Image (cartoon, rainbow, N blue to C red; front, side, top):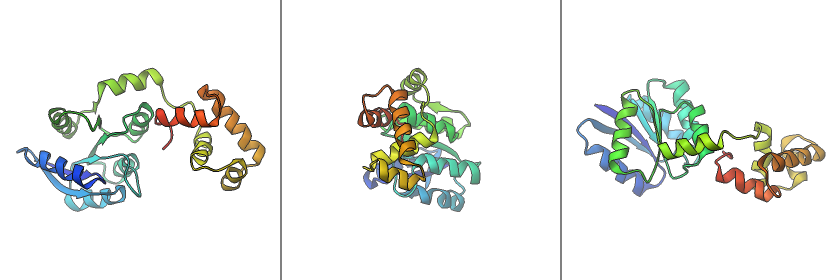
Length: 202
């Protein structure tokens, strides 16, 4: 029997997914949680061998939760089920060593097959997304450049970014110029759009 922890912050979706999984004779939803920070305690409490995780959850996102499981509950394999099916997001998930990555619009049969394959120790990745990620590649931005761009996304100006990152204003401007050039963007707003579209911002 495959014991599953289901993490999804939207109650209606979570209940519907749990009902679908519980109909299967070889699956049992051992716990349902609505935030990433609840995943590890639920897995440890139930002894679940599979965690199905949404990415966009309050407190801790699904990819971070998957990385925590990898380090603290390595016997539990993870399947990301998300509406944020972008190449950069897939690369982040693979860095966290998830076993599966499927879009939320996958058919019930695709989902059930994916859950079983993950439970059997195999890797499951949506083929269209895998091809797109392969073509686009990983983010060209450094961690520091992502941090600076994330501050832009929050609406911070150059001075505010410098204050929160312990960088000089000139260094922040240099980072922003490098970001725009690396992404082939017209300006920082366009760079932000490109990074978001490709899932390169956490």
